[in-house]
Length: 293
Image (cartoon, rainbow, N blue to C red; front, top):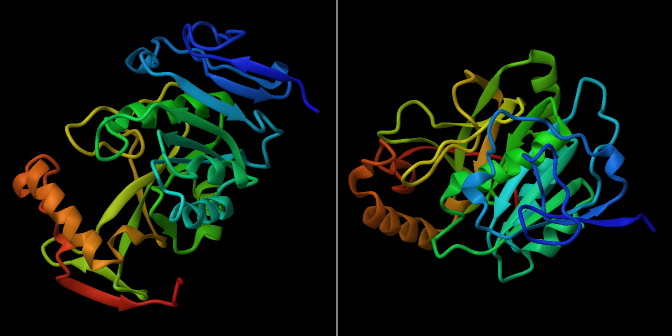
């Protein structure tokens, strides 16, 4: 049995571990702290989240990185027990290791995260009274601070209702091409597992989302009034057409209607995000794909 040591952030927990007074985690670390390599930073990025109790369990802290460096998956989720396995299978194929964050789920999300072999850390956060993990940048930055401990070559982010169409290509493309960051095209699952909306009417030629970036210590996702980015901006992002993200949150009509109604209340006319929510209207170019059921 490995030695169990308790780590904590701020005053919470037992046996407080500090990484040069900057990076601290709460939870159960399984293994020796000799493998923990903290990354110093000029500022303390945890100050914005110091009021939360952060709990996490390291299953595997710092293995020997694979040739070319580690590609690390990041995912945050609330009550995603049913849809999460698809996203984790995709990240497991695309990445060498995964860090997950459970934002106060009341279902089996935490157990699902811990059940995947490539998940090396699960962070648990007290639930906030908002429709999703919001403010999003707080949870994104918790994941980034955990990534600083592992010092990966690249970080890749997915939402719990997404998967890569060709996940096996992600790692090789990142390490061979060496982009500062990557934007992937997005296709929206529609009514059946073999149909996607690829070019929403009014949304331009296609929608892309930045979801991978070359790791730098202390990277930060800035706050936003509604949705923030999944990854830090400012590094420059390449488009890689070889891989698309398939978004499963639009599969059912009732979910699309619910989201349209929610955004109509929270962001009338798309003024905050900068665009109306064309991809939820069902107008655009559809495409048949091999069934993903």
